[in-house]
Image (cartoon, rainbow, N blue to C red; front, side, top):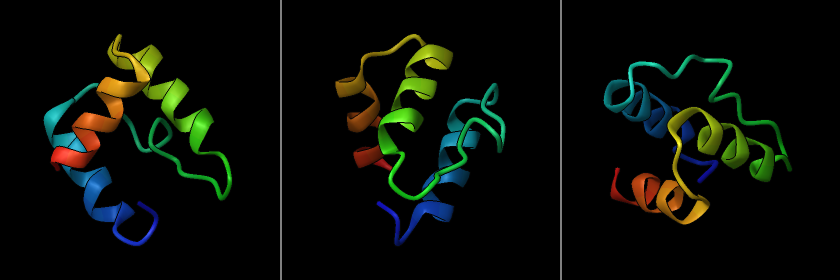
Length: 56
């Protein structure tokens, strides 16, 4: 995910306009924190978040 994160981040922001750059801040080794933030903001499960990201 890290290699093309900028592309994924842009697509997530297009799909979910309520997401901000801060919401999508990927800190090395903190993927779980990112998933938790997205789960909270979007009201989806971790599995749903991972599915959304894999579809992008």
